[in-house]
Length: 420
Ligand SMILES: Cc1cc2nc3c(=O)[nH]c(=O)nc-3n(C[C@H](O)[C@H](O)[C@H](O)COP(=O)(O)OP(=O)(O)OC[C@H]3O[C@@H](n4cnc5c(N)ncnc54)[C@H](O)[C@@H]3O)c2cc1C
Image 1 (cartoon, rainbow, N blue to C red):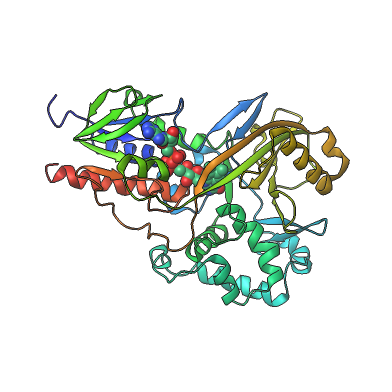
Image 2 (image 1 turned 30 degrees about the vertical axis):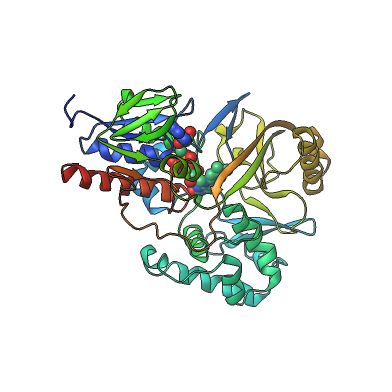
């Protein structure tokens, strides 16, 4: 094997590794993707159960994510969108907070909802306007604080913060104390203002599948776990040593720091997601529902089958329920507690819902408290010929995973171009 026959080895078959592999492949550089799990896609997976499509942890694609627009073919993903806004539960009633330009019909409810003062609404419009100005690169160079500090400094009332920002942004960053960076908050608001929250019609796993489709079938190996990085290659769990022209470590942050003996990244935040089946729930529109009361376990509820009918068999609805963290309860007690809370939201009909699955995801995202890295920078090698992509010293999310995959591919290309 000549040095140029050796592939670039990518450890991790999540979307960052797949994006990196695709960029290298389109430039004629042979790649090999090693994935420890039985399936590619990493944290974006869709399980099929009794005709329902269960994403492993409720998640959405923001259609305005610039790198997703650049990398993915939205038309082939057959994106289906949530209604622009959210329903917020306050003192037992659901209020709609909708984008007045896109949902003028919900204007009255939006104005009268007891979510904050009129001044809060004006501040929110002002913030939404400000975050859409300027380049994203500039946004990530701004001084940062926690989202909570930023909102307080911007003059939002406690009611607005607790009833809107905590359930909304707490659900995005999986942290009810919203200590994530103000830069991340502004980025998320910008994406909600500029685009829509969407699901591929056949489930979130269609995203990695689309990346896989652009690569030769023989460049993947699943069920193969990298144990450690060695000189010019990688050693696997079974003792095999694979030579590589360059290496890209595209695993989640704790595993990247283990493999490369780097300082640990941010702490992990967890999500627990429960799915229920109901008879058709056409009593509801396709808004995400947030818990604005701040009590109980539930952070948000969605009905993916209202967004794409392929998420449930004919005549049925799929309901996803998201809790932040991983409650210290047995599976049975957890379902009982969540059912009781759902009963408070929707009444006795919840008794007829069937519990389908509970996913407890210990490392759903890394904690995103400041200081956060600037995601717009080219990777420098961690070791000679060894690069990283994904969330280690980067931001989590589909946008950043895809971008870091492209940047890592570019850094590898430059390294190989210099004779590496
Ligand atoms: C519950 C949940 C909700 C989310 N919600 C959203 C959302 O709404 N919007 C959004 O944009 N993002 C969301 N995200 C984040 C987004 O899914 C991730 O940022 C993205 O999928 C990460 O991709 P990745 O390739 O960086 O990492 P991963 O998907 O973690 O891929 C890493 C891969 O490496 C493999 N691996 C690990 N160790 C080894 C080893 N030693 N050898 C070989 N392979 C190894 C793993 O099995 C895995 O397949 C959410 C994530 C979760 C879990």
